[in-house]
Image 1 (cartoon, rainbow, N blue to C red):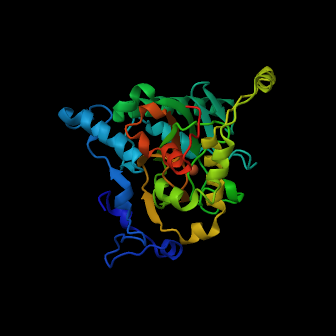
Image 2: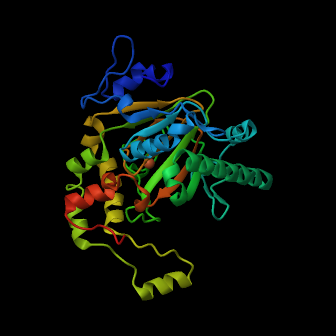
Image 3: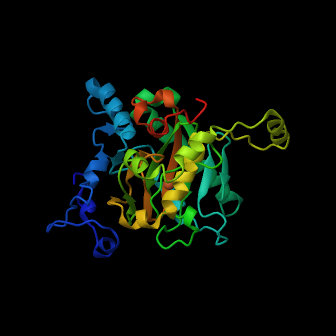
Length: 347
Ligand SMILES: [Fe+2]
C-alpha cells in the first residue's frame, strides 16, 4: 500500500467482521473479488493548495486525470489537509459537546444561506461555529476548483457537515445506518442524473475513520438494480409537480421537488442495499482506513460506502452537473438508462 503504514493496521477484531485476509506481513490481500484498497484509493502527493500541481507543465493533464479517476469510481486520497484550515478552528470543533437530544447528531451548514442546522451551545459558540463552517466551505471550494480544474466553472457548492458523533455503535434505524453499504441519494434534493461529489476530512487527532467499500456501481447495478425495481420505476417515468400543486406549495414556502425516475430509483436503491442482509454480509469488502488529518474525495452516489467507525469529520458536498463530466457514460444515470432501455430524467 502506498499511503503509509497506517493502512496496514488491520486489527484482528475488524478481520473477524470483514471477509478480507492479510498476508503474513500484515498488508492487505485481495478479497474474494480480487480487489484491494489500492484498486480504489488514489494517493495524491503532487498537489499543494498554495502552489498547485508540482509540475506546471502537466497541471492540466493531472487535473483531468483526477476528474477521470473520480468518475471511474475511485477515491482521491491526501494524507493531510490539503486546503487552508486553522489549528484554532480544529480545536474549537473538537471541543464541541453536542446536545444529547438525539435530534441533531450532525451539524449541517448551508453555505449559500450561511445557516447552521443542529448546532448546540450558546449564542457566542453558535456564531463561532457559523464562522468556522463558512471558512471551511470557502476554503474547500477554492481547493476543489483548483484540484479539479475541468469542473471548476460548473462545480456547485451544496451543504457541508460536521460529524462529531462516534460512528461505531450508533443506534439508528436500518435506512439511516451509516455502517451499512450504500450509495448516496438525497430525499429532498433531486439530482436528475447530476452527481454528488463529497470531500471528507478526518479532523480527529488520534483515531482513523474507517470505511468499507465493495464493487463498482456498475457491478452492483448489474447484480441488484432489477431486483430493486428499476424496470418498474422506469416504466412509471419521471414525475413533475403539476402547476396547481406547485403554486400551493410555493405559496406556503415549501420546496417543489420534481423527482425523476432516476431519483426515485436511487432512493429505492439506497434502502434496498441497506435492507439486503445477505448482500451486507457476503459481498466482497475492502477496508479503508483514513488516518487522523487525512482528506478524501469521491462520488458517493457511485462509490458504495459504509462508515464503520470514526469521530469528528468534516464534509463538503458539491453537485457536478452531467455536462461537466469527462466520462458521462460512466455516470450512474447512464449505467441505469442503458439497463432500463429508456430515459430516466428530464435532463
Ligand atoms: Fe452515505
